[in-house]
Image 1: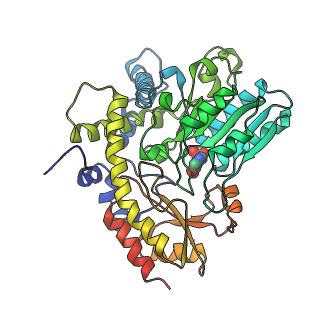
Image 2: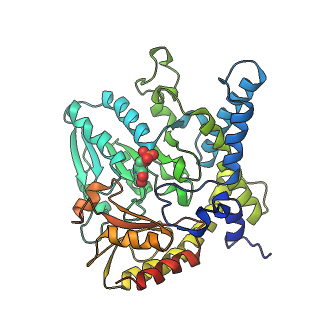
Image 3: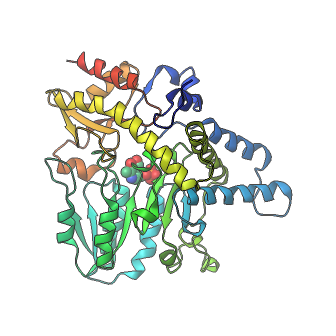
Length: 416
Ligand SMILES: Cc1ncc(COP(=O)(O)O)c(C=O)c1O
């Protein structure tokens, strides 16, 4: 086997995911990754181990309980290292929607009437509604709108919206419909000049490479772990100096116990521990392709990320090119990925068929996809697309192959 450090070894990747050997799953090309990904064996193992040996209330002094608690802390610590944060900056909750809802409930106490909050119409509703609700405490909500022809957000428009009164900018790192990657670093720099905080939604970005939150400069960043090869949980990062001061949303006596102040009820224990399996999987990917042991974990992640993006670019560009040149379809977003300016999350619709008809047809061809608005309801509205029928979304990740993309292209070519 020719393993090198410039090309992702897809056979190795697939061998880590039991779904590819499962009698039901294995005949499908899976294109619903932006909805939720498959999990590697390492995650299943950690979940099983927890359920068999340590399924007790954690943090007591007997061994099963001690180990359960230690593994919960380990999972949080590993994830903090993977995204270049510290353990006190990580909140693991039930979903991104819940995490952002709790965060907005806490941030609302720092707003006064007339303060401004900027939301986009490109985001998933999870990063819009909690901030729009701040109008209840007198905040003025401003909308950073996409260009209806390109579906992209223009940073110049943000500059025009920002004022001395702006307190919050909520924006997606990558749209779950358009696929575009927004420049969170630049957005954070602009917002910080006005002393506003930035809440980045990384749900559609993180499955294609865990971020370095310090480099992005965001104040809060969130992603859903069930889309990054794990169980149904979500991670919220917050800068420690801000988290420390946020009003408590948890039991009253936990007032000074950040970040639990923003995590009422805490996460599901067994699922939290299974996150160690994601860390183990990414380390195995690193060790399989590279040999330098002396790097920090986030540096290893960066190297794995670049393997993943080159692979994703290769498999997605063929499909983007086909959809862009096929007159009967309208592709949303950029027609080419280069330098990670786009995720392989590809949405389109037809001039002649409903999105449901296309999706049903693809499913008949063993291509797992769906039509929907994917809760980016305002984005579809702005593009003039029926929000009921929605778009067809084909979302790939690093375990998809060129053959998967070619299967979609030949199916669509035969669809009249
Ligand atoms: C971009 C984006 N943000 C937020 C969410 C909400 O995530 P959750 O299901 O964890 O609440 C989703 C879910 O699909 C999403 O795609």
